[in-house]
Length: 239
Image (cartoon, rainbow, N blue to C red; front, side, top):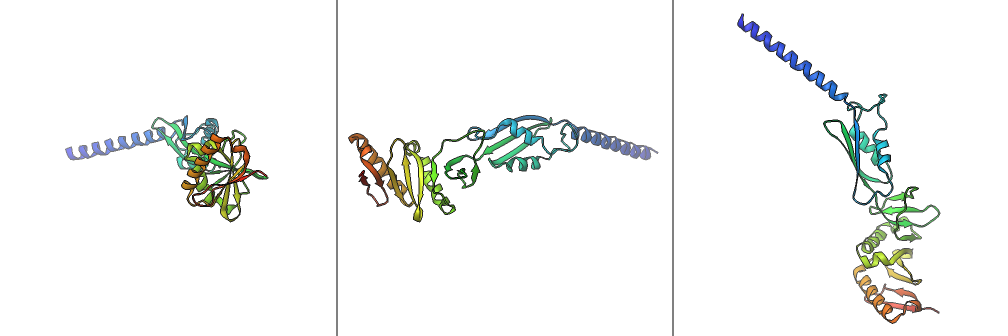
């Protein structure tokens, strides 16, 4: 008799635990999801606003007027944000109390392609449309073709990592045979770089030329500066 009562007690206790678990699960799923915050990783907010990302977070929920944990699928939200052309990566989190937050890394343009349909190009080579929300001050690239992409990005990276060149170079001409020319701030001569080999040496020579030209006030005398010949700077005077 005692064994029967004991077994009934165990079954009853397990039943109570199961009901509590199901009730807790239902309450948890029905808990309202609260939009918490959007954090932009890396550079400043270039093209996307916090409000815009929040609108993406609350899109495509089921018929409920308020999204719940049951209707919110975090992976879908991440994909929805990442489908935006300016987004490089997104991660969406939800805390135990129902607060949703997102970390968003935007694509950062490194140059602007000049043409009838101008575009930005980012560090990975992805072409981005211009934005109505913001514009970015980056070098202008002229006569760009798809075959220039790899070498152009290498050239842009070298310019970006050098403070002197970053402030000085305002444009890049893509020339035949994967050669490149630089347009310089406040000067009307073109610097012919040639191909992207030995860029460190070429830019070292360019800096030496600038120091000499500035000292002797020679900038206005030149129409063309050629760095393509190894370890030489060949200057052509204005006709």
